[in-house]
Image 1 (spheres, rainbow, N blue to C red):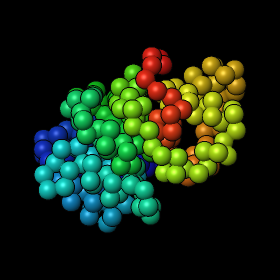
Image 2 (image 1 turned 90 degrees about the vertical axis):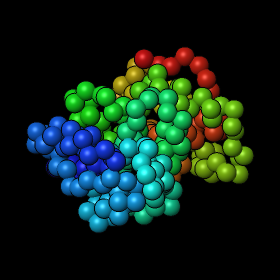
Image 3 (image 1 turned 120 degrees about the vertical axis):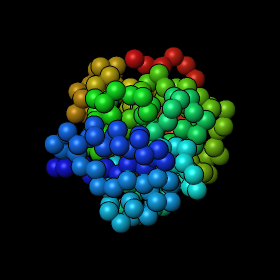
Image 4 (image 1 turned 60 degrees about the vertical axis):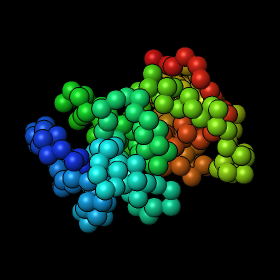
Length: 224
């Protein structure tokens, strides 16, 4: 199955570089390019990409607002968005993740990492390195959300599912969670799927945000 990708970056040279990298991949097709957030929104709605590579800082409409329009809560048929940034601690990255992005990638990442990022997000997983997850989401530890604003499904999670959610929030992969809890990886995948379904969440990124907002986890050593 071919992964359809939309490139959104205000620098033509950057878009050209990404396009050339992706052109050599048999399972990836670039279906459009946008120079700002408004173009990205309009083009994505027309061509229906599987993944949008979204620069976070663009004129007119920035990457955060464009992400919210394409992948935010309440959006029908949300698009998977990978945020592109120059700095791993860009202040806007957290906002983009909260707006619905499935992860982020540094612009100077090697070609193989770019390709892997697209495949990971297209498969429905989140693109969050454990060490960066903690730094990005530490802020939620001091910004608890009122219980009335948290997903009602939290009360329906079993003890095991809460345990899995805490480890997801620490940035552990399914394999690492399986090793930690002495479970089969397939069992962990099932738990994660049930957690997302009960909380009505799209992916692991949203699950991480909810876990931090609910106080299920907080600052501490990252996994990995």
